Image (cartoon, rainbow, N blue to C red; front, side, top):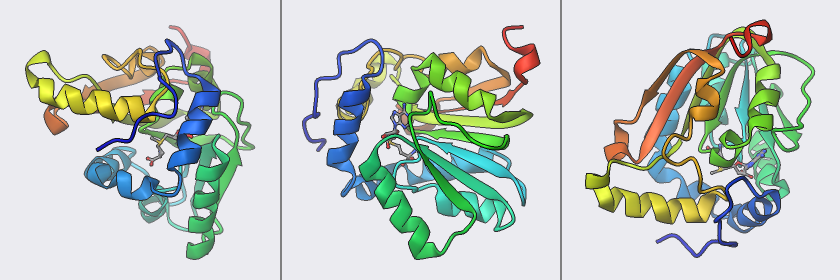
Length: 225
Ligand SMILES: C[S@@+](CC[C@H](N)C(=O)[O-])C[C@H]1O[C@@H](n2cnc3c(N)ncnc32)[C@H](O)[C@@H]1O
């Protein structure tokens, strides 16, 4: 059963302080809590269509649970850059990188809205990063760090159809525990949808309680067209 949230997330927009507190308290047990969603993670990484040598951004990377799958896809000649604002989650990611001896995985400890990277990436993953997706500045900053044509995949919780109300009880409990902006659970992908080409949403898994959205970054010169 989800534990009570650290703060009551009734904000319309993400609350950074509440999010930091939320994940500070979850960092130690986080990897076990996400086990149910591992098939979705595998599917999300597969849909990035990564190739050997690619650079991929793992936005809101948390403890780095996606790194091994990303590593399988890009190889040691590729690069994985984790962006994460919570120091305690970042510590776990650092431990994972050290334990694996990964030299091609780097971390940027910063909010996605202000993180600065030295190079443009071939792809970006937003796996269970609802708060990030509800922040237009964060989406804009991540897209600024992508090559035109970069593949973008986002996943997360989503209100299921009304008939699937038991699923929605689960979504409600999980969201209260893991996001600070309850707005946007109807179409969590909407901030990305207007920016990406070939945008598609698949919400067939877990009776509609989760989604995978995919698209291609059209490049800054086409922004808003
Ligand atoms: C549910 S966890 C997902 C972690 C990871 N993507 C995974 O799949 O396990 C959400 C993560 O997003 C981070 N986060 C939330 N808002 C953020 C922001 N604005 N910038 C960077 N990270 C953020 C949280 O600290 C947390 O680690």
